[in-house]
Length: 219
Image 1 (cartoon, rainbow, N blue to C red):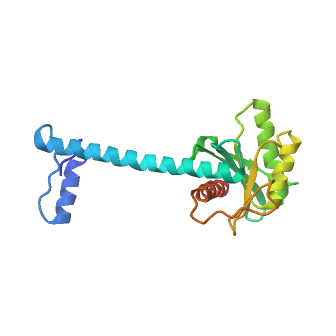
Image 2 (cartoon, helix red, strand yellow):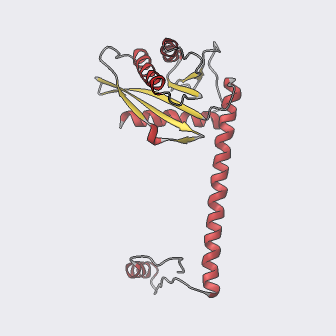
């Protein structure tokens, strides 16, 4: 087996591979000649395959963001999305999570958790509290505001989020809700929810962000 670099445990690997195939196996790092050319070719092929896959994934993410821009009639693609999820732990303590997706990628360093205070134990009140706390802090710090606020929930949760934004003078921010069972998108502008096709890249992106917020809330 020709490899580009010497493995630290070559002897153990050779023994294990020999036992697997029933004959002697050697691991070699060729320095020159045809064998070295084969290794270099494999490296180039691997790099090309990685770049192709990455570029395709990146293109799909931007397609999803452009679709969201059109469906939600946004002035620009929602490059920065902040998503909120409410979870009740063992029926007692309510916590909220916020995750950030930027350019189609999750920004784990910007995730936040919030312990909901005792007076806000239903979903609507909890959403109102956490949205109020998050964007009041951003106003104080002069931070970067999202292009889209995503709420895990339907019309009621979305209304609670907008009530908090209006208190802060931030009603110009765009928020949407996604209902879990039907996977419908709720907006302030549309009376009826928006139903995207099940495999639409835009819906898949929204679901991925929502699921990440839920995962982060319950860990």
